[in-house]
Length: 389
Length: 160
Image: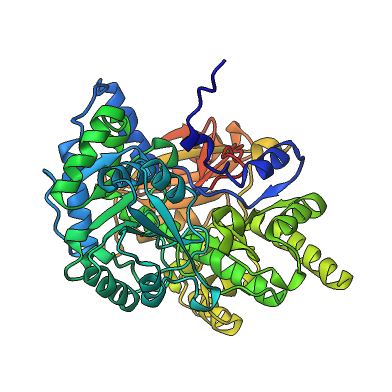
């Protein structure tokens, strides 16, 4: 029989976390700090709105780009938080999570041989989505000494005449790094000069702990060359609802909508009705969750300091990214050993790119109780390793 | 810090202060200072424990009593409220807008004792016009806490 599989797909690397997943699932009393989603339930008034929409029989397709009311609320939200005006008619599309927006955004702009610049460590889907869209991914290995921020210089060095898109993943998963206005202005200068497009994944924009998030699209001359991606998963604890969106130049959104229309039809209707309420009334709940994450973040940073584990202070998302280079072992060995010996699951930094080597990702989307238990196990483990060395 | 501190303490007054200081990004001295101010200002009025008595062998019966009263000249409702809240078996007294004036919650060992309190003590107060007693059959949520919550973490154990 012929091999029916696509070379492009079989050529993609399998996810680096699968192996851990299997072990943790089988292990009794393991504590996992490996989850990339909020521990909060979706606020009740949002769930209630979803239920109400079902009761009223709102069970049909919505327009391809999403409910008009939702697009208006999204445009409103972006205007309010970022001072950028998008026309809800043709510059906003509602997608199945931020993930779909990444996929169709790349597919809408990539021609064969185009290059997509991806700073790493970063979320796992940028590279495969670029490859599937037919682009060549160009990786920038971010550095801890820069707090894993992308610098204009690093960007400039990665640009060739084939560069079309820069993916800008901030606030960052897995490092927790953020970019501030000054950083963005420098990057924007290079982007405009070299005439490239930015895909800015801002899914963690509500979860910052230093200053409010600034979108690169808000910088002068950038709105017309930015696809801004955001969604409801992280800010409103709505991961399972699968709802995100993209805002950008009408001609790009139009092409994205075409792919979306043929491949997806529309984002889940129930989720869209619930999301309208999230945007209308959710800011108080978001702030309470943000406070909670910040308390845990401070707790972890203090714990690392006390056990002398090197970790730059992250100001975004819900991850810390401690450095484990002192133990002279790979991230994967460290994570495996920690799991086997102390039953704590963390994700090796290398799951998010080669430059994650020497780091592990610890999620603080867990109760203080769980974090405390896990930290005491990690401390025990770290001390054991130090003694052995 | 104050709002954040209060909302944590309201949920967990037994939290370790060293840990709490770290969570709030302040020193332990600053924290203790703020807490003692809150106590002095009577913003923090006490530290209690939420007990699910149903799971113990101790018999407790609770009731909500709606009370209509005649307010008294010069003192409004305060004097009659005081006469009611001084009984130790009275757990709370609220002045309420709407169809009646005071909402009194009561905790006793038995139904009979509650009936006794209402007929002998409460109804006989001169400014009390009428009472309506509602017995509590089951507590689902109290002080913001769901009583029988057994929630597991249902997330996938590792996700990117």
